[in-house]
Each structure stands twice: as structure tokens, then as C-alpha cells.
Amino acid sequence: MSSDQPVLSLRDGAARAILAEDLDVKTALAQDVATRWHARRLSLRSPLDTLPPLRPGRPERPELVSPTQVKRRSLHSPHGRIALLHAIAHIELNATDLALDIVARFAAAPMPQSFFDGWMQVAFEEAKHFNMVRERLRALGADYGDVPAHDGLWQAAHDTRNDLTARLAVVPLILEARGLDVTPSLRAKMREAGDEESAAVLDVIYEDEKKHVAIGAKWFRFLCAREGKDAAQTFRLLVRANFRGAPKPPFNDLARAAAGLTPTFYRALSSQSMS
Image (cartoon, rainbow, N blue to C red; front, top):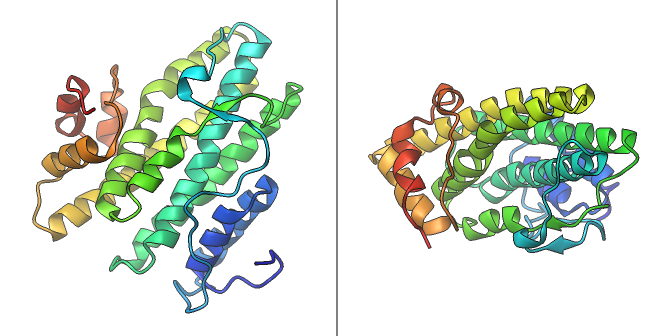
């Protein structure tokens, strides 16, 4: 579908943003669709909507490799900081598509309008994060695509494509919550290395991540309550069934709890194999 055709609905716009291979088009479309949805200028669905793809649109670079092939470097070198920022940009790009996919794939689910409000806010902010990190990479003489990246994040979307409750358990409450654990130490290391500009970008991401985990926890609890299920127990069951690996300590228990994700959800998982 041509990018200059009018967006038919929220689902259509979200799916078309996921499909976009040009990342400037992807982030601009995600933010435009979010703005129009929040202004109530789009319907939720239409009969001729673009359907969400199994994989998001991507440019030719970066090369996608196994997570074990992604090198770690010291943040005290410019190359190390570029590698970290590139990894964060890759995470934020995937997070943009993941938020859009929740909206597009589950647009026919019996959920309140505020559910879609929340996830389009997330999509808008994840697109903002990607653009902020990319701008910082360019200021350092690099760009997104210069460093190999791994493809594990989108696997979570594929594995939970038929189950909204499982999607909420794995994406915001495992993957996004991980950002609450690691971002404070990363921004501190950036400041130790004298890179205040990169640390300031991480400050913005961290504050927004708290809201995103809270949105995920709110709607996960909503679905569990509607089905008469214990939220923490259901979370553990779904993570064991749908996530490859285990949550890794140390955990930022305070930030997680403030977002509605208390230790009863995840502590029992961290010491057990889910392979």
C-alpha cells in the first residue's frame, strides 16, 4: 500500500507503521496516528484495513545476528558508548513496533477505548526515544545500522500473537520492566564517562519506561480480574510458557512496584529454569 494513501483507521495506521521500512516514515507515521487517535479523528477499525504483518519492516542494515554475537564494550571508549546507544536504539525501534502491534493485532479484542489510548501513547513515546537515540548516535559520528543487532525482541511478539494476556505478560512486564532494572546503572556509567548528553537521553527513556510498565500492569490485571484469575500466578504461568529465559536480578523493586509489578510476580521466576 502506498504511504500517501489516507489512513483508514487506528488499526490500519498502526499496521502500516509496522510495515514501513524507512525508519523516518515509521516513526513519523506512528506519532501521527497516535496524535489523530487521541484527538478522536480515527475510528478503531475499518473493513479495508491493512493487516499487521508477521515481521516489521526494516532497512537493509543493521545486520541481524544471534544475541551471543553482539559484542559488549567498555563505556569509557567512544566505540563502546556508540555500541551501547546502538543497542538501545534497536530496543526502542522494536518497542515502537511492539506497541503498534498490540493495537493492530488486538484491535478486535473486547477492550475499552482507554486500552488503545495507552498503547498509542507508548508507541508515540517509543518512536520519540528511537529518534532521540539516533540523533545522539549521529552527533557521535555514527548512525543506526552501523553495528550488528539481534532479533530476539520481535520473537516475543510472534510467540504471543494469539494471546493478549500473554503478550502483556511478556512484552511490558518482562522486556520493558528489564529496562527499569538496567537503565539507572547505564546512565550513571555514561555520566562517569563524561557523556552527559547520552545520559540525559537515558533519563527521558527511564521516566517514560515507568509509565509503559504501569500501562502493561494495569491492563494485565484488568484481564486477569475479568477472567477471575490471580494476576501474579497467571503471570508466572504465562511467562514460563511464552518466554525463553528467566528474569535476571538485580531487580529495581521500587520502580517495578511503583508501576504495579510487585515482587510476587517475578521473584519466583528468577531462580527457576523455563527452558
